Every structure is written in structure tokens, then in C-alpha cells.
Amino acid sequence: MYHGRITGKGPLTPAQIYQQPPRLLIVHIPLPSWADICSNLCEALQNFFSVACSLMGPSRMSLFSLYMVQNQHECILPFVQVKGNFARLQACISELRMLQREGCFRPQGTSLQLAVENGLQQFNQYCRHVTTGAALACTALEISILTSQPGRELVKQLEEGLKDTDLVKVRRLQVVEIVKETLGCMDSASPVEESSSDESSFLGTDIDLQTVDNDVVSMEMLFKAWLHNSGTDREHVHLLLPSQSFNKISRATDNPMCLKCDLQERLLSPSLLPGTADGSLKMDDPKGDFSTLYQMASQSSASYFKLRVIKALKSSGICESVTYGLPFILRPTSCWQLDWDELETNQQHFHALCHSLLKREWLLLAKGEPPSRGRSLREPASTFYVIVPSRSPTLLVKAVATRELMLPSPFALLPENPPDDSLQVVENVLDLLELEPTYNPLQVWSHLYSHLSSTFAKPQGRHHPSWESRALRKHPCKAGQLQTNRVRATVAPLPMTSAPGRAPKVPAASKASSEAIFQLSEEEEEEEEYPSGP
Image 1 (cartoon, helix red, strand yellow):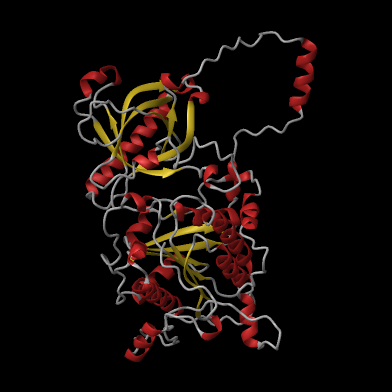
Image 2 (cartoon, rainbow, N blue to C red; image 1 turned 30 degrees about the vertical axis):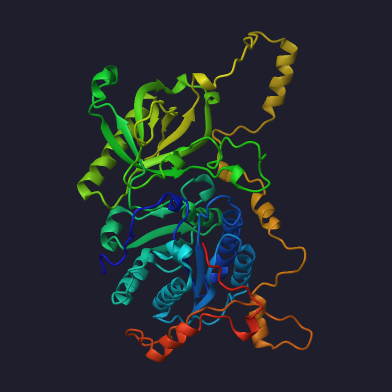
């Protein structure tokens, strides 16, 4: 084990609340499993990047790189910016689709380890060549290994193979095992399962092990988790509850119970995507005038957004028409700066609150208390929220209307006895409808992925996928034939070996050459260089 080598450094700034760390995805799916997984994986990546590249506002993802490990490791895509690079990412996915799916299975024991080391070396070299404005993106790297092999065995191999590797810039190392049995994720909202407590104690805190079903929706959810702010440097929200009964709120406000929570988006706002919503409707837009929880929680690390619970409401006593904006999720914080006992106690109290609210069929009305900004003669306007419990260990938070926002609605009551003939006609029509007990958004799709992908198409010229370059290297072009624009890895690749021992170190000459290789080859002089900012 190599405890303490993977760390997240420094508090999150307001700009970093959206931007996630650079991602290195290593696809470790040897033959013959690749034939069963390739199509689902490529479609999931295509769908994910069509959304990630389209989101307006601050960049949610800075850099992305992709390695493939079958009989050996290969850099399919060196580090590129995600925003504005959909064509290059699509070409990378096209190359994945064209990889060999059948053939001899000769896995190299050190190929995966070399892919991690080579990707980290490439990341370090990229960081040395970016400008100061892009330096924030190079503070830490998250590595995800997608594998068809047993996850526990792979974790053991990584722990042994990387014990002497400097992983100080690796914020998180995650192994995701693709399970062969499809467990019907269309009926599940949580396709990615986290390790049990026993597995966590076996694996330690440095390598995460998860499982995902071999279907498109499950893999999409795995990649969409990259859009979440998953930093553990600080908690985001303090939920303040009176320490006594709700009948004695006035006496309990001096010493409230404080639950420390992390905040997550529940849904992506349609107003953040081009051409999917009326531009004048900015109610759900984090960039608009409505100050959402997500904005308020992105204060400096010295202050936290506070939600003070002031009343309890019956679940049946609130109309959905008085709530507005997209919901957000509160969950127990995983801030590493808190000691273990405080984390455990906070989680237990949070779970107890969820159980109690469900049992009583209660909601909570809370008042938002942003951090103090010094003395002011004006009392700041307050925002009120309804907190809704769920069967999962989370609380749903939605903004609720106040008196100042209410408009008159002088509507008469619905007549109690409509005409019998009209009632019979409508009843017959309703009987023709298929009745669903609940609404599952995973079963409803609007062709958004294809719409977003089409917006990146360039009518002035066809972008040739980089897999064509692979064929052209095997069969050189004749005069007048297509030339390749493939982007190569920008570091000297680590040597591959089938020996059971440690991989040899890169010699000094190779290190020197890797410093000078950060440029495009002659056949790529017309290709765009690495952008300088995230």
C-alpha cells in the first residue's frame, strides 16, 4: 500500500467549483471481451462528450486523455481540452470502434502499469508547457481504469506495481469493473455501485473500486459523474436545525445542530445547452439573476452557505407550483479535513434525519443565510427552500416562492359534477393510456445527443477520423490520396517488457528527448497545437 501519496491540495476557489480536474481514462479490456463492450462504451463516450462540449459557462472539464491497453498499451488521445474539441474527441472514439475485436490474447503483465506511468509522465510534461493562466488545471490528475478483469485482482497488481511511482499529482485512482451480466439499469437510477465497507478496508483509501453494467446508460452515468464537483477539500453547506423540539424553535436558535453537507446538481439546466430552450427563460440558469445554492456554496473556503431550518411542513401540504428552479442534492460531507469521528457522527445524524422525515411524512422549510459581508444598513433579501427526504441517503433542495413573488390567481373552483356524457367520453380516452406507477427519466429520451453532435459538424470540410491514419501507416498514400492529421502522444513512450519484475526506468537520454518532443511532427505541422488555457 502507498498511503498518503494521492492527495488533493489547496482549497477550491469560486472558479474551481465548476471546473473538474484533468481526466485520464485507461481502457483495459483485452480480447475477446472487447467485442462485447466496444459498441456500448463508444456510444456512451459519444453521448457524454456531446453534452460536456456543449455546456455553456465555465468549463466543467479541463483536459482529457485516453489510453487503450490490450496486448500492449497505446495512447489513443494525448491530453486535449474538452471544450471546443468535440471533433478531435469524436475522431478518438471512431478509432476505438475500429480497433481489432478478435485475435490472439497475449496480455503483458506490466502493460497497465506502464499506461498509468506513461499517462502521468505525459500530464507532467503538458503542465510544464502551459501558460500561467492554465496552471490551475495541472494541480491534480484523476485516473479512471475501465476493465473487464476482476477488479480486486487488478487493484492488487496496481498497488504492487505502483508502490515506487511518484503519484503526488494523482488526486484519485479509480478502477471500474464492467460486469458482464446486464442488471437492467434502465430501472435503476444508480448504475455505478460503490465498494462496500469491507472492500474499502481491504483496498485502503487510495484506489477506489466500482462496478458498472455493460450497457450504454450505465456507462453514461459513470462519465457524467465527472461533471460533479467531487472535491473533498471542504464541505459546501451547513444545515442548521434547532437542538430542541420544533415547538420551541425560539429557544433553540442560539445553539443549533449543524449537519455538514456536500452539494450536487440533480439535473443539468437546459438553458446551459445551445438550441434546447428559449434563451429568455433563465429561471434555472446558474448564470442568471436567480442566485442558486450552487453559486452561493462556491464561496471561499473560510465561509459556508448556511440553511437554517425554521419550520416543518406536511408532505401533502405543499403545491409543486410554488417551487421553482432545478433541484439540488444535499449529502453528508466527505471533507478530508474533518476527523474520522466527526465524519461518522455527521453521517449518522444525517441518515437519522432522513429516516425521521420519511417516517413522519414531513418536509422542512429552510432559510438561506449566505456568509456575512460586513455591516450594512440594508437587510439582504432571503431565499427560502423546501428540503425533501428520499429513500437514498440524500435530501432534495428546491427554492420555494415567498409573498413578494406571488401573483394573483383568481380562478373559480372546479365544478364537482361534470356532464355524464362528457365524463364517459373522457374516461374511455383515459382508459386507452398506459399507466406507469412512477416516472423514470432513464426511459425517456429526446434525441438530444444526436442534436448536440450535429451542431459540431463542419460543413466546409469533412473531418477524417484518426483511425484512417492507422490504415494509412500500414498502406502508404499514393499521390492525391488522403493525408492523415493524427495527433501523436507528446512524450517518449515508456518501454514495454514481458518480464515479471519492475519496468526499467527511462534513461537520461530518453528523458532529455522527451523534453524536446513537445512539438508536432513534420506531417502534423498544420495541425493545431495544444491550447494554452483550460
